[in-house]
Length: 262
Image (cartoon, rainbow, N blue to C red; front, side, top):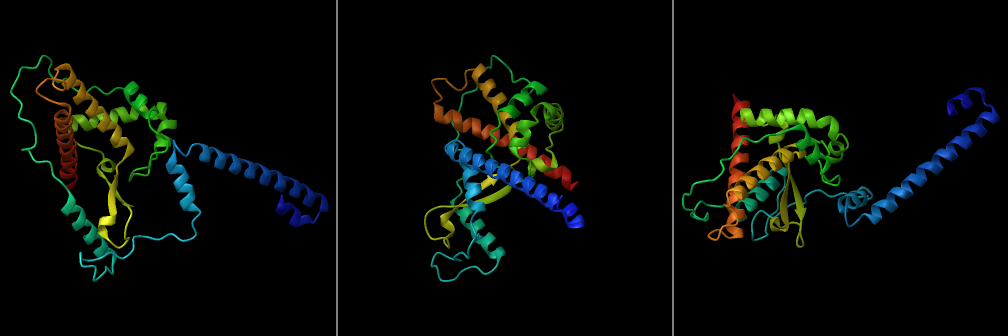
């Protein structure tokens, strides 16, 4: 409409353009106002949306500052590679590995029910997609949980096929084994590596497959009364389930990487 006015220089066209411009501007401002109000009311349930909006309004955005190279705080890093090495060494030093000695010693016993094969159908995947929280961050594949939730009925069938193929072949999709590592700062000196803690972001689709495997293992333990027995308290049961679940997922990831290298 503005281009039309510039061609003929008609006052009527200019007034028509002004009316449309003001109407669009009024609608846009109304939508923005309602969005801000809704975001403010949902701060408790969806805090990430509010933080994302607040960060987008900041004029200066700082990256990870220079870090101390040692505990004496004499020298700081110069390059990003040094930052990665300092953080990697610190996280490795505070990481606690779960050894096999910590696991409880269980007496061999006969199981009433054998572990069945994991059956993945479209209805199960669709239900898990609908249960996703839209406020969760996207993984390294940049597929947001809101997209998966809105298109649950359309994506349930192909995802079920992919999950069944992964379980039968023992391989994960290429994007399923990717991992993004973010830094969350705690209180303290920003140059101190101990001020940061790592937060890993994995694919939302891969998390759905993990939930299916986890629920299947827990159901197997419940059927055979392995969780709530007298000789196995709750903490030991959680530790044992975590160990089994961790071994299953590590096996899938390692098998996928070996096949990719071949």
